[in-house]
Length: 132
Image (cartoon, rainbow, N blue to C red; front, side, top):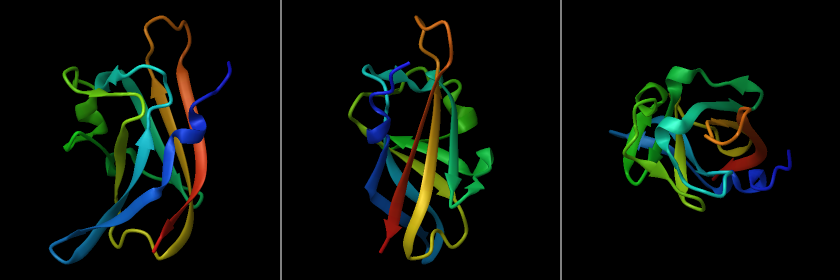
């Protein structure tokens, strides 16, 4: 299968640590849908993130689009919210202390359920992101 949109999945210039009550509780990075149509969030079967060679536990991953934040479990029933092509959403990682300043390797895997495809649509991208 030809992979066309994977190079746009990770928005490497849209990365920041999350500060809550003066404490860094995690980080987020921008992501784009690697599919030519928008999809309901419930059609995202799985999101996987690997930072600097370490797999991020599923319970530490959240997804934010249009100002709405979901856990992966909540996305399973999010039929009324969509992620549209070209739209930047945010992958939020709960990680005390966030990311240290400098460069980090991030891998993102999205498993989408596409009705007319008789096989899983699993897309992967890897890029270097930087925290200033």
